[in-house]
Amino acid sequence: MLSEKMENALNEQINAELWSAYLYLSMAMQFENSGMSGVANWFKIQFKEEQAHAEIFMNYINQRGGRVILKPIAAVDAEWASPLDAFKATLAHERKVTAMINNLYAIAESEHDYATRDRMAWFVNEQVEEEETAQQLIDKFTLIGNDGMGLYMLNQELAARTYTAPSILAAE
Ligand code: MG
Image (cartoon, rainbow, N blue to C red; front, side, top):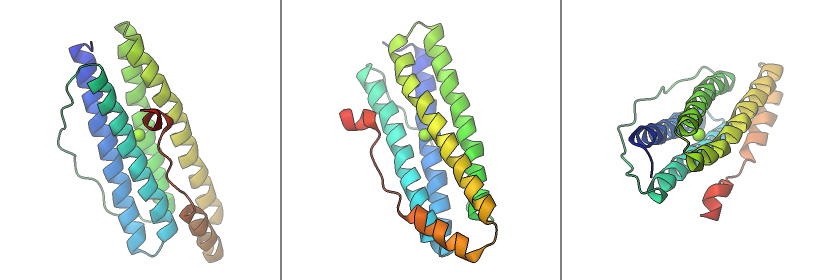
């Protein structure tokens, strides 16, 4: 059984993951509108990934006999100056998410709730990838600057991203 503190913290994380989904969907819509459909595609897949993260938390709470409570999703920004700006915002946001996941891990550990701690370990690793990917894209867009051909090619590269369900969800 989950402690009340653990259950509340996991429910907060569902909200944070859904907020992340909403943030990336907002980015996708801006770049769709500004003709960078590859960048939009990348963020649309990120939107799906964040929904999957929320689903993993929901499934986990249910598995442990807890109660999922969905809270209002706060508003997100609608404008970023450039893809570089959006990926900088992505990295800053993912760093906050990493801190939240680390906090969940710490709560689980302090309560000797090893099942939750182990589930959080998956997210700890996932966050390493999220931050690395955002940093790599910041590096690429920084390198290209305002070079039109470079932007065209990187947009094409991001158009190739496809969605794969996270291993935990695929196994459930
Ligand atoms: Mg996430």
